[in-house]
Amino acid sequence: MMNDFITDKKAELIYKGKSYSLPIVIGSEGEVGVDIRSLRAETGLITFDSGYMNTGSCGSEITFLDGEKGILNYRGYSIESLAENCSFAEVAFLLVHGSLPTREELTVFSNLLGGFALIHEDMIHFFDSFPVNAPPMSILSSMVNVLCNYYPEMTENPLENIDMMAARLISKVRTIAAFSYKRSKGLPLIYPRHDYSYCANFLNMMFDSPVNPYEVDEEVVSALNKLLILHADHEQNCSTSAVRLVGSARVNLYASVSAGISALWGPLHGGANQAVIEMLESIHVSGENYKKYIERAKDPKDPFRLVGFGHRVYKSHDPRARIIKKACDQVLGALGISQDPLLDIAREIEEVALRDDYFIERNLYPNVDFYSGIIYRALGIPSNMFTVMFALGRLPGWIAHWKEMWEDPNWRIGRPRQIYTGPVSRPFVKMEDRSCKSSFCPVEETKPGVHCPVCKQDVRK
Ligand code: ACO
Image 1 (cartoon, protein in one colour):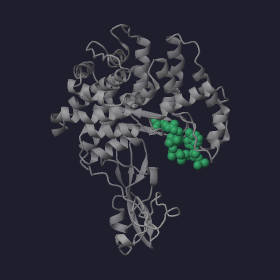
Image 2 (cartoon, rainbow, N blue to C red):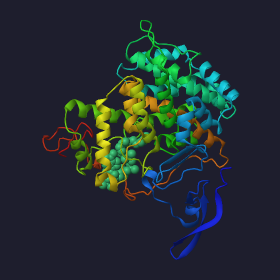
Image 3 (cartoon, rainbow, N blue to C red):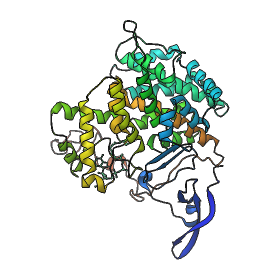
Image 4 (spheres, rainbow, N blue to C red):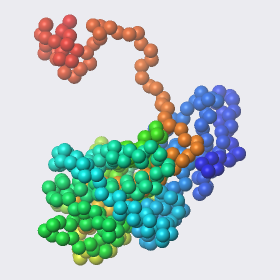
């Protein structure tokens, strides 16, 4: 399966006057690459590609995206059709198993999601050990890692148990996320209910209270469903590559996904959704003109970036951002929010940026994170939970990639090479002959006999 894309076409590489033939690989959507696996053995060369701008790390049947045309398909189905017609559970099944579920398969899968929703009661004590303001992404990553201690049988025969492990993880992550929110607020935990759908169950665990019962609103459920589907996979992004790389060392699913959650936390990746809403709020609260932020983003001397803009792969538009932008109006309307000043600022920024040469020349468009926070905020999700919401959505994708890698007969541990740029071999220096590089070293101020706190030597020696 995985080697089907290797063709008998060849690319020629000429190095030191000698010609080498490298096989051409062609994907099912016509993507073309050069297979360089034998390059080093044959030529002594390696490729240099920091940031993996041009490196295909695997063949994958899960997600196709065309950044130039703004296309995103899961298992061949367009993101638009899935977001319009499916439940998140259906899409999770599709990603993990490769085909859309039949009614019976979906019932079985949904029952598993419902049945696995509790976490071991002992794990609930862990929430008390985190500082009250601990970032929810750090809690989520830690708690997911801990799951392998409670379900070790799942990790012994991962491929035999993958259906159960996937359902267990998708279900429990939702419970962990909602519990961490309740604990951070000092509120009683609301346990999952078997009679609720995946999204309704999550919302109920987040917002129900013994003194103020939560009424599940179908519009809110439907908006959350759409957002989770749009985030469910995005091929070899930073967090998915982290899951694959960690998993390639034959690490269990829970620990691999925990690494993915950590990667997603970064403000240049999933953390951008929180950063966007904080940027829009600060523009709103300060009363400053948003154009100042656009100017700052363009200034090469200013590290500020217009968060929610730009994408490594999308160079025309992010199809997810288009769907979310449209959904913003629907959701706010359905929730009776006639006007949202943050949405107005976001729209104005987009309009101005899309006409600005700086953004046009660099192909910078709103990405999935630019408008998603506005919907999460309208749904009552606090901004420090936005990236957790992203993780809930992305989980089926991470699981699908981990599973695909484990099933790949050509699997190898992930181990990139490097171009070494450090010092060439040097004679060994004895301790007493080494000079101290410590910034604490009081070279200027010290008197004879005063010792550096780091190297313990008399620095005036
Ligand atoms: N605001 C201003 N300038 C930007 C932005 C931005 N948001 N994004 C990229 N640029 C500029 C860079 O300064 C650079 O300019 P230069 O060529 O004059 O030096 C050029 O565009 C190319 O940027 P790179 O950083 O090389 O692009 P890369 O593909 O490495 O990074 C990334 C992509 C990280 C998404 C970047 O666009 C960014 O930082 N965006 C803001 C953070 C964000 O929204 N992240 C979420 C991405 S979606 C996701 O992960 C779910």
